[in-house]
Length: 255
Figure (cartoon, helix red, strand yellow):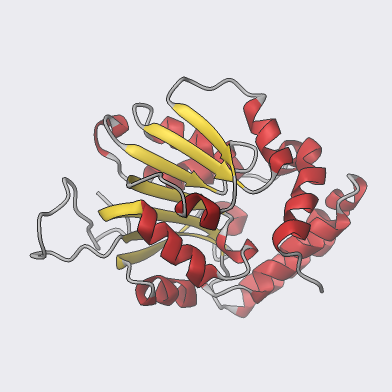
């Protein structure tokens, strides 16, 4: 199975953008689990006074989840696919939400930031160099800032790998093929199989310098297939001034 990368992947998402929302709507829990992950950021006071980055926003489903979780935050949403962004911009948004067309690395090289939190849904298994993007995220986050990654990352148990294979063969690839996007949905299948397991991605976050790394499962059929990863940007208690909120290990979520 061949993975799509960089411009080829962006073009594939451009083509799929017309049907993407309809296909994801067929996935039970797709939007509710995005919202669960966004809420796991535990941004205080509805995000009042905070700047939040949605990295890899696609057609805006993750942006909508962030807006519901932190309705008072200023949200910047970024994606490398112009087609997906066009779909996002067709939807109604309040004034504090804005969209930009660029890659994560391009965005980090600009004058944006620092952000109080970064939300990245279905991003890291789609980039050529996840470590480089994690470095970019750290440059965009303020010290102690919060990261939530919502990602297809298998648990490592054979049963979850088998379930993913079965769902892709029976549902995801046939549905994508009907829309003329077989290559993209075969990429989805292969990218999940080839990406880090959930424990391995948590270790990758730690190696990148993130602290307080926690992972939490999602509900429904995606349990063991999709996880939320929560972390801080290098803040350690006693080192400098603490941010206004802290992380807890008791539930695997930030409070």
